[in-house]
Length: 234
Image (cartoon, rainbow, N blue to C red; front, side, top):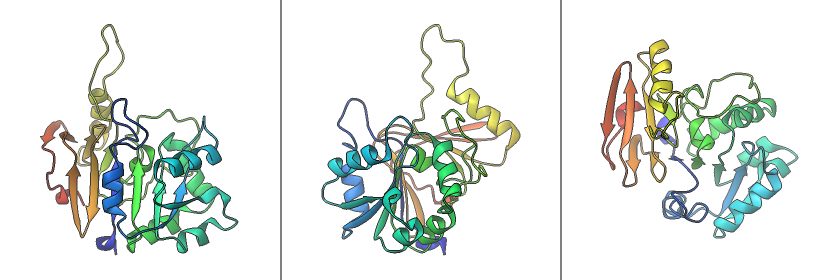
Protein backbone atom coordinates (compact mmCIF):
# COMPACT_ATOMS: atom_id res chain seq x y z
CA UNK A 1 0.00 0.00 0.00
CA UNK A 2 3.03 2.32 -0.06
CA UNK A 3 1.72 3.92 -3.25
CA UNK A 4 -0.72 5.79 -0.99
CA UNK A 5 2.02 7.26 1.21
CA UNK A 6 2.25 11.07 1.45
CA UNK A 7 5.59 11.82 3.12
CA UNK A 8 7.40 15.17 3.41
CA UNK A 9 11.01 14.70 4.52
CA UNK A 10 12.62 18.02 5.46
CA UNK A 11 16.37 18.14 5.88
CA UNK A 12 16.15 20.52 8.83
CA UNK A 13 13.90 22.69 10.97
CA UNK A 14 15.87 25.81 10.04
CA UNK A 15 17.71 27.19 7.06
CA UNK A 16 20.49 29.56 8.09
CA UNK A 17 19.43 31.91 10.89
CA UNK A 18 15.71 31.98 10.03
CA UNK A 19 12.89 31.39 12.51
CA UNK A 20 12.00 27.86 13.57
CA UNK A 21 10.43 25.98 10.62
CA UNK A 22 10.51 29.26 8.70
CA UNK A 23 11.42 27.88 5.28
CA UNK A 24 9.31 24.78 5.84
CA UNK A 25 5.96 26.44 6.56
CA UNK A 26 4.86 26.75 2.96
CA UNK A 27 5.88 23.17 2.16
CA UNK A 28 4.06 21.89 5.24
CA UNK A 29 0.94 23.93 4.45
CA UNK A 30 0.83 22.56 0.91
CA UNK A 31 1.45 19.00 2.06
CA UNK A 32 -1.22 19.18 4.78
CA UNK A 33 -3.85 21.13 2.84
CA UNK A 34 -7.25 20.51 4.42
CA UNK A 35 -5.74 18.99 7.58
CA UNK A 36 -6.43 20.39 11.03
CA UNK A 37 -5.75 17.64 13.59
CA UNK A 38 -2.09 16.62 13.89
CA UNK A 39 -0.23 14.31 16.27
CA UNK A 40 3.36 15.37 16.96
CA UNK A 41 6.02 12.83 17.95
CA UNK A 42 8.73 14.57 20.05
CA UNK A 43 10.66 11.41 20.97
CA UNK A 44 13.89 12.66 19.34
CA UNK A 45 14.09 15.47 21.88
CA UNK A 46 16.81 14.93 24.49
CA UNK A 47 17.93 18.32 25.79
CA UNK A 48 14.38 19.67 25.55
CA UNK A 49 11.38 18.21 27.35
CA UNK A 50 8.69 16.70 25.17
CA UNK A 51 6.14 19.21 26.51
CA UNK A 52 8.45 22.10 25.58
CA UNK A 53 9.15 20.58 22.20
CA UNK A 54 5.46 20.21 21.41
CA UNK A 55 4.79 23.80 22.49
CA UNK A 56 7.57 24.99 20.19
CA UNK A 57 5.99 23.29 17.20
CA UNK A 58 2.52 24.51 18.15
CA UNK A 59 3.79 28.10 18.24
CA UNK A 60 5.49 27.73 14.85
CA UNK A 61 2.42 26.18 13.20
CA UNK A 62 -0.64 27.75 14.87
CA UNK A 63 -2.96 26.84 11.98
CA UNK A 64 -2.93 23.22 13.12
CA UNK A 65 -4.39 21.56 16.21
CA UNK A 66 -1.20 19.82 17.35
CA UNK A 67 -1.12 17.29 20.20
CA UNK A 68 1.98 15.56 21.54
CA UNK A 69 1.74 11.78 21.31
CA UNK A 70 3.48 11.50 24.68
CA UNK A 71 0.36 12.91 26.38
CA UNK A 72 -1.91 10.17 25.02
CA UNK A 73 -2.85 7.25 27.27
CA UNK A 74 -2.92 5.07 24.17
CA UNK A 75 -0.44 6.43 21.60
CA UNK A 76 -1.45 3.95 18.92
CA UNK A 77 -5.07 5.07 19.23
CA UNK A 78 -3.91 8.67 18.88
CA UNK A 79 -2.32 7.72 15.56
CA UNK A 80 -5.52 6.03 14.46
CA UNK A 81 -7.59 9.15 15.22
CA UNK A 82 -5.46 11.88 13.69
CA UNK A 83 -5.47 13.49 10.25
CA UNK A 84 -1.68 13.76 9.99
CA UNK A 85 1.52 13.09 11.92
CA UNK A 86 4.66 15.17 12.41
CA UNK A 87 7.97 13.81 13.69
CA UNK A 88 10.55 16.28 14.94
CA UNK A 89 14.32 16.25 14.85
CA UNK A 90 16.82 15.66 17.61
CA UNK A 91 18.63 12.39 18.21
CA UNK A 92 17.70 9.68 15.70
CA UNK A 93 18.71 6.84 18.02
CA UNK A 94 16.47 8.15 20.80
CA UNK A 95 13.59 8.61 18.37
CA UNK A 96 13.75 5.09 17.00
CA UNK A 97 14.34 3.64 20.47
CA UNK A 98 11.13 5.22 21.76
CA UNK A 99 9.09 4.21 18.72
CA UNK A 100 10.06 0.59 19.31
CA UNK A 101 9.89 0.72 23.10
CA UNK A 102 6.43 2.22 23.13
CA UNK A 103 5.20 -0.20 20.45
CA UNK A 104 4.32 2.70 18.13
CA UNK A 105 6.62 1.86 15.20
CA UNK A 106 4.33 -0.60 13.38
CA UNK A 107 1.19 1.52 13.76
CA UNK A 108 3.01 4.59 12.47
CA UNK A 109 4.40 2.64 9.52
CA UNK A 110 1.00 1.12 8.66
CA UNK A 111 -0.97 4.36 8.97
CA UNK A 112 1.40 6.31 6.75
CA UNK A 113 1.63 3.45 4.25
CA UNK A 114 -2.16 3.66 3.94
CA UNK A 115 -2.23 7.41 3.31
CA UNK A 116 -1.87 9.27 6.63
CA UNK A 117 0.15 12.41 5.72
CA UNK A 118 3.58 12.48 7.36
CA UNK A 119 5.90 15.43 7.96
CA UNK A 120 9.37 14.86 9.39
CA UNK A 121 12.48 16.95 9.77
CA UNK A 122 16.06 15.96 10.55
CA UNK A 123 15.75 12.77 12.67
CA UNK A 124 12.09 12.63 11.70
CA UNK A 125 13.20 12.38 8.07
CA UNK A 126 16.10 10.04 8.77
CA UNK A 127 13.74 7.30 9.93
CA UNK A 128 11.91 7.39 6.58
CA UNK A 129 14.67 5.44 4.85
CA UNK A 130 15.56 1.77 5.13
CA UNK A 131 17.63 2.21 8.28
CA UNK A 132 19.25 4.89 10.44
CA UNK A 133 22.78 3.75 9.61
CA UNK A 134 23.56 7.04 7.85
CA UNK A 135 22.38 9.41 10.57
CA UNK A 136 24.79 12.10 11.77
CA UNK A 137 23.79 11.58 15.40
CA UNK A 138 25.69 10.06 18.29
CA UNK A 139 24.37 6.63 19.35
CA UNK A 140 23.43 7.72 22.87
CA UNK A 141 20.91 4.89 23.26
CA UNK A 142 20.45 1.55 21.53
CA UNK A 143 17.13 1.00 19.75
CA UNK A 144 15.69 -2.49 19.34
CA UNK A 145 16.70 -2.32 15.67
CA UNK A 146 18.31 0.11 13.24
CA UNK A 147 15.55 -0.74 10.75
CA UNK A 148 13.52 2.35 9.91
CA UNK A 149 10.11 3.02 8.34
CA UNK A 150 11.13 2.30 4.75
CA UNK A 151 9.03 4.93 3.01
CA UNK A 152 11.80 5.21 0.42
CA UNK A 153 14.11 2.43 -0.77
CA UNK A 154 17.30 4.25 0.16
CA UNK A 155 19.23 5.74 3.05
CA UNK A 156 18.85 9.38 4.03
CA UNK A 157 21.42 11.87 5.27
CA UNK A 158 19.68 15.11 6.34
CA UNK A 159 21.77 18.25 6.99
CA UNK A 160 24.06 17.03 4.24
CA UNK A 161 27.20 19.10 3.76
CA UNK A 162 30.76 18.21 2.99
CA UNK A 163 32.14 21.39 4.55
CA UNK A 164 35.44 20.92 6.38
CA UNK A 165 36.49 23.46 8.98
CA UNK A 166 40.08 24.70 8.55
CA UNK A 167 42.48 22.60 10.58
CA UNK A 168 39.91 19.84 11.17
CA UNK A 169 41.41 16.36 10.79
CA UNK A 170 38.33 14.22 11.34
CA UNK A 171 36.43 12.47 8.57
CA UNK A 172 34.26 14.52 6.24
CA UNK A 173 30.61 13.69 5.71
CA UNK A 174 31.48 12.18 2.34
CA UNK A 175 34.08 9.94 3.95
CA UNK A 176 31.59 8.74 6.56
CA UNK A 177 29.01 7.96 3.89
CA UNK A 178 31.71 6.23 1.83
CA UNK A 179 32.27 3.88 4.79
CA UNK A 180 28.59 2.89 4.65
CA UNK A 181 28.79 2.45 0.87
CA UNK A 182 31.84 0.22 1.22
CA UNK A 183 29.75 -2.23 3.26
CA UNK A 184 26.51 -1.76 1.31
CA UNK A 185 27.59 -0.86 -2.25
CA UNK A 186 24.15 -1.43 -3.77
CA UNK A 187 22.24 0.79 -1.32
CA UNK A 188 21.80 4.44 -2.36
CA UNK A 189 22.32 7.23 0.16
CA UNK A 190 20.53 10.53 -0.52
CA UNK A 191 22.11 13.58 1.10
CA UNK A 192 19.73 16.54 1.35
CA UNK A 193 20.97 20.00 2.26
CA UNK A 194 19.38 22.26 4.86
CA UNK A 195 16.43 24.10 3.35
CA UNK A 196 15.53 21.27 0.99
CA UNK A 197 13.22 18.29 1.28
CA UNK A 198 12.11 15.09 -0.33
CA UNK A 199 8.43 14.57 -1.09
CA UNK A 200 6.79 11.20 -1.63
CA UNK A 201 3.30 11.66 -3.07
CA UNK A 202 1.16 9.87 -5.63
CA UNK A 203 3.80 7.23 -6.13
CA UNK A 204 6.53 9.72 -7.00
CA UNK A 205 9.58 11.04 -5.14
CA UNK A 206 10.64 14.66 -5.77
CA UNK A 207 13.37 16.97 -4.50
CA UNK A 208 11.98 20.27 -3.19
CA UNK A 209 13.83 23.53 -2.62
CA UNK A 210 16.54 25.44 -4.44
CA UNK A 211 19.53 23.26 -3.51
CA UNK A 212 20.94 20.16 -5.13
CA UNK A 213 20.96 16.78 -3.47
CA UNK A 214 23.81 14.29 -3.55
CA UNK A 215 23.35 10.59 -4.13
CA UNK A 216 26.01 8.05 -3.21
CA UNK A 217 25.94 4.53 -4.68
CA UNK A 218 29.00 2.39 -4.16
CA UNK A 219 31.96 4.52 -5.25
CA UNK A 220 29.77 6.85 -7.33
CA UNK A 221 28.69 10.31 -6.23
CA UNK A 222 25.91 12.03 -8.20
CA UNK A 223 24.69 15.62 -7.95
CA UNK A 224 20.91 15.94 -8.41
CA UNK A 225 19.34 19.25 -9.43
CA UNK A 226 16.54 20.76 -7.38
CA UNK A 227 13.02 19.80 -8.47
CA UNK A 228 14.38 16.51 -9.85
CA UNK A 229 12.31 13.35 -10.09
CA UNK A 230 13.80 10.70 -7.79
CA UNK A 231 11.04 8.14 -8.19
CA UNK A 232 13.64 5.51 -9.07
CA UNK A 233 14.55 5.47 -5.35
CA UNK A 234 11.13 4.28 -4.23
